[in-house]
Length: 219
Image (cartoon, rainbow, N blue to C red; front, side, top):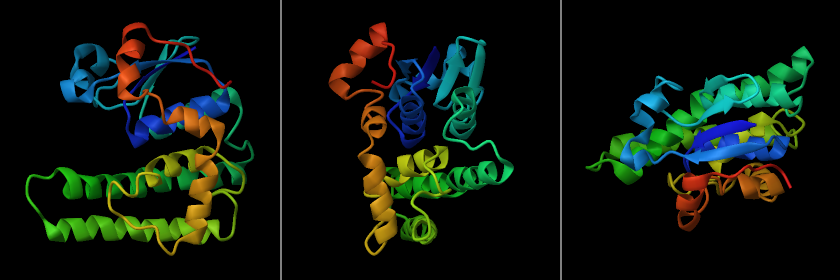
C-alpha cells in the first residue's frame, strides 16, 4: 500500500494518475497548502523541502519526494510504464526530465505572473508564457513523429500531460499544435487519467477523504 500526500496541482496529479495507471493500491492524504500543512514538522520529516507530493511505501517504509523521482519509483515497483532496455529507458527519462526542468518551471512561473503576482509585470508574463509555448512546440514536433513522447505510453506522458492540460490557466495557447492536442485528448480519455485528476477529490468530497482516507486502485 502506498500513502500519497498530495494536493490538486499538476505535480500531485502526476502521481495519482500514475498510481491509477499502474493499479497500485494507495491511500490519499489531502495536504491543505493554504493552511501551510506542508510546513508542519510531520510533513517536513518526509520532505525537507515542504512540497507535495510525497509517498510512503508501507511495504518498505520508504518516503519518496519530488514527483519525477516518485514516478520512477512507482514504475519500477510495478514493472510498467518504464522500459527496462537502456535505449527505451532513457527515451522515457529524457522526456520526463524535459517536464521537470522545462514545462514545470516555465509554466509554473507563467501562472504566478498571470494569476497571482500582486502587480502586473508584462515582461515577466511575456517571458514565461512565450517560453512555455516554445516548449509546447517542442512536444508537438516530437508527437508528429510518435504516438506518445517516447514511443509507447509511459510516465513521461503522464508527467507532461499533467502540466499541459492546464494550459488555459497559464493563458498559453495551444492553437496550431495539432499533434499536441491529439495527444492531450487521447490521454484525457484514459480511465486512469479521469480518476487520477480527481485525487484529491472535488472540494465537496475533500473533507471526507481527509478525515478517514480511502484505499484506491484501478477498477
